[in-house]
Amino acid sequence: MSDTIFALSSGAAPAGIGVIRVSGAQAFAAVARIAGSVPPARTARVRALRDAQGALLDRALVLAFPGPASATGEDLAELHCHGGRAVIAAVLRALGMQPGLRPALAGEFTRRALTNGRIDLAEAAGLADLLSADTERQRVAALAAAEGMVSQRVRGWLDRLAMLAAVTEAQLDFADEDDVGTDQMGAVREGLANLAADLRGVLAMPPVERLRDGVQVVLAGPPNSGKSTLINLLSQREVAIVSAIAGTTRDRIEATVTRAGLVYVLTDTAGLTESDDPIERIGVERAAGAIVRADLLLWLGDDTPPRADAIWVQARSDAPGRGAIVVADVAVAQSDPASVERLWEMIAARAEALMPRGDAVAFRSSERAACAAALAAIERDEADALIVAEQLRLAIRALGGILGIDATEVMLDTLFGRFCIGK
Image (cartoon, rainbow, N blue to C red; front, side, top):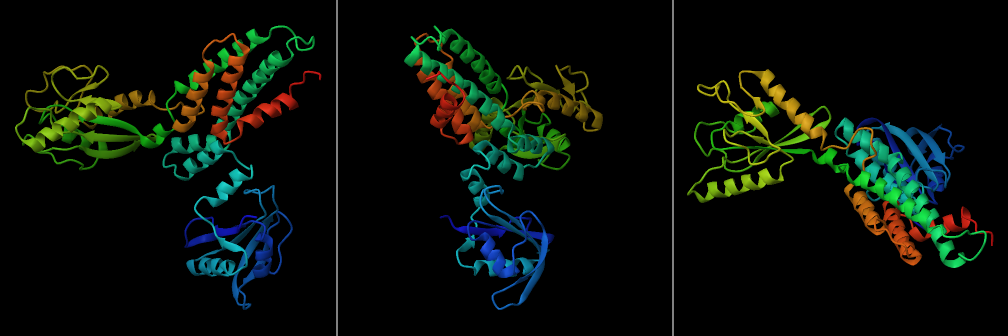
């Protein structure tokens, strides 16, 4: 029997309300000892909370959620107390003195929900992302996963695979039986081809982590090309030192900017030049590496950009002698805020192509790896039913891992519960 756990489940005190959860076999008994009695299931009642000596701790709303129909799948009680630090500390201390109770570990309530089948692994991952979401688009993607959108997609694939596996097993074991039919492996291969196309569609989309990690925008060019000025203009704060002295920026300088729900990591790099200074050479090498790894490159040089997909920026276009220079994409002047906004519009248009679509179900990198493994298992067109059966088994195992379920159980449930061979 697992321990009964308790913890403050709402925000840190002080707050208007402090919600304390207790989950496990001893939850109701423990709450009854400090609240006098446990109210009927899913009914809020005001109770006086008292310690072991009978001293009043608080008057709180008490709710009881009998398992397995609770958030954790166990008996679960909630104490909605006043949210002061001293009140919360006193109630937690009183619970800690109850036999069989201990403070919960980080994430333990959600882990018990997963263990007890209230949520699956993809929903748990979505909940973790939801708790750490900083932008609206992160919230939307995380909420979709927490509400089971990823799980529904994967379960649909597993159902299709399990049915195909059942047909394949029937062909292997009972191909000579009249009620099984003749050769159905052509239909199985067609089903696998359709599923492979679905998996390729998922893998063609960016991972959901893109929304959290942001778009890496690197500013590069020769010394004194205006990189430091531009990063300050784009971030609207003094991030980099601006100087007419060549080599002022010797290492990468980063600034994080959030616009329209997207995160951008702007990186100012050292000027690309030949130098005898060993420190400056290191900065140039790091700048060259940043250019290669950048999601978007803003090139501020007057010569051709080192990447064909770079946004070629004519920086300091209001400086003497700069107005006649023609570049491919956009001119920016410190005295013209509209020019900076035009550059931002170009950056945002490129960035959207790197992000998951708002109407699409976005998968995490680990989930995409499982999809890739499933695709690798089924994408070869095989005629031998034994090989196809192994392909199906590997694909089911890979996709089952996304939900944290046993792939064998998926196959057996479908074989005996939905597919009948009349025997």
